[in-house]
Length: 428
Image 1 (cartoon, rainbow, N blue to C red):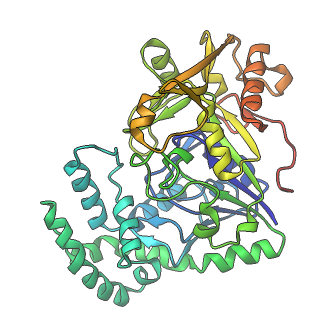
Image 2 (image 1 turned 180 degrees about the vertical axis):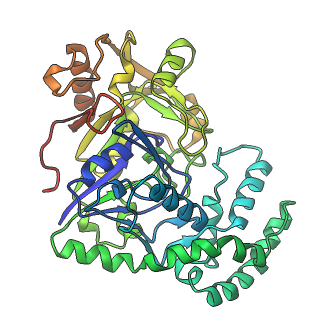
Image 3 (image 1 turned 135 degrees about the vertical axis):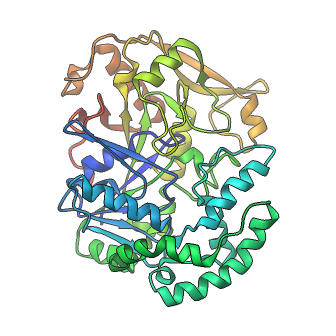
């Protein structure tokens, strides 16, 4: 099987969209297997910036089929709006198909998301898009799926039964109940646009694999936001790891071959939760502005930290990462010195793993090494050997600390500003 799985190794926003866009040129299918429109990819090429929240980044490659798989939770109105915006920009979206088993996000989910976050003493930092409540409904076995949504008669029946339960919770949080009539009205156009795109995407993807097609699995968010293996409770409601692919896409585990971990040359995080290598002041401000570190979905400023090798090794262990892509190396130009976390000091011991308790994580002191920075601009660098020597050393140190091959180095926002170090990742 010829597959590549793209995994965020940090707290999301690592630059997965750019690598998905690049590898989609070689792929027959790009599959988004989890999450919803709480995530965002920013793709830049030919001077144009495109923000995606649901549609896979492969949509910009005319020969590539794009799949929203069953592990996702999908806001149909948001999806319809995104498809219309892409079409208005001249992008052909006919390649986008949607799983009939994917769960639907409704206004009740968004209402509950905001109300529940407001009621918490310890805020998680949710985007308010309804992701968590939709996954909760899925687990509670009274959520609605796309197969229900596109049939107006069926949707009306299931919606009324669903609201009998959901509105009780909405009222309990002091929020305004949602009406079936308004939901039906607000989603009517989305239902018409999405209905022709529905497929059993598990069958669709597996047939492509059986035919020897190249399939790219695209994750959202990052490993440290994994519901099981992230910094719980400051996590998302699904698993962005490679382990989430078989379940979310409906493929066998042995379909996971090459796993490409995406890491920034530094670390960022949006929302609440601990960030062991977090920095403030002029350096953090300079990195944030140069790297345009503001959330694609929320616009919130991202918190900035030094690169954390403990986090990278955690991600490698969980997802079986075979290669790394180092993104936004150019953002570190002019930063002296550069620092990397190589371990945590916890209660007098040095550890190289992530504690389960957030209280323990809060007590971790990063053990840092420093390296010489670089001043030369990287915008026009085409090969690794043409990078400044100190930039080369920094990338090599990441490979050494993680015992992982570096496959890509990004030196600017455009798709062409990417150095490729491994020619063929499709052979596993």
